[in-house]
Figure (spheres, rainbow over the protein chains, first blue to last red):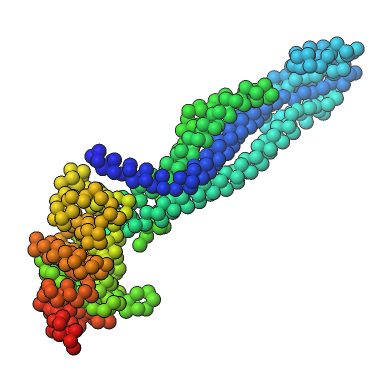
Length: 293
Length: 236
């Protein structure tokens, strides 16, 4: 490949690209919106998955004791828990310790000094070996005498995961629609260029240019639309992350844990690859349809 | 060089453009295809450069069976052919030089070959001094010479011309005709579809006459009208 050939080819691509600036901008913008949505969706999904996994992992069963539970009953419960194979650990938390932990957790947002007496019951804090055993352990503990009530976060977690699934379905639907829109707009842009260049194309075909050679500038144009749109989207996402991330961490302290293990450079590269793929597929199909003689 | 055997062409709308055409053109020939508009001259040329496919019959061009040619082999055929049209088909936003070079560049030619070949053909058609001009700045004859230069730039063995002088005044017509003859004398097989009686009668070359898609006469040194010179037709 000599430099003259490269120059000629790039010149053809540049001419194509500058032929319908408005359409190119529309195509790039649509790709950008699509990829921003995709990026947000992937991020939210990763965050929800991480939070869900974490909550499932953290889930513990609190067995609250009746106020009138006897020492013997407490000892019997502890014995029962120590032999249950599903139980990983069980810790007796007297109500004084419970209050201290509550104070620690709320960090002064609740003024416990106003309490005239400790309202908390004594409890056992039980962790299972696997999250799936939580309901079974909870049910068996509830039957023991001296146990007042058994609470675990299963419902919250279930709802969270359900919410995640719904969001995922909506997200995928929206993204499919936007992919289709971006594809159609790129394809229309290419079609306009093909139409504007129909004389050149006719002459190329007449003098024996191969169809691959005729297609290539149009494919490059579509690729350019896709990649530029994706770059724009990655820029927007990066800017949004820089601007909103600290505030998000402040507002939702638990989100910090979910944000950990995403390599942002890999993520950006993947999004750009997706943009290139949209551009390539859309222009390939479009040119193929319009060059057939 | 060119051979048609039992070639018929029926368009999808049912029009029979060519009907059992048999024609042999040998290397170095200069052949006029004559006949009224709509008698199949353009259709015959279109079959040769595989813009259309025959409904029946065999077509061989430079050893290639064009009627059986697969789509992806068409570019290879066309690199052996130069085609010139009545309306020139030049790119108005490219200079003469660029229009001619374009035909080489899009076939992936090396730049050094383009640099060598383009000046050669521009010199042949006498347009070296106008190579930087745009088609809009040229006369009709000069535009057609540019188109001929483009058709020749890939060194085709065969030059097909569809009404090459149809848009030109008599002076430019003479000029183009002389150029085609010069090209033919260099060894290129030339096929010209025309209904320009003056050109045909002055040249006295092989004349193949088409009527309603059939070849009716084929004369070695013919006139536009069967056996008659220009003056005789006008008086008769």
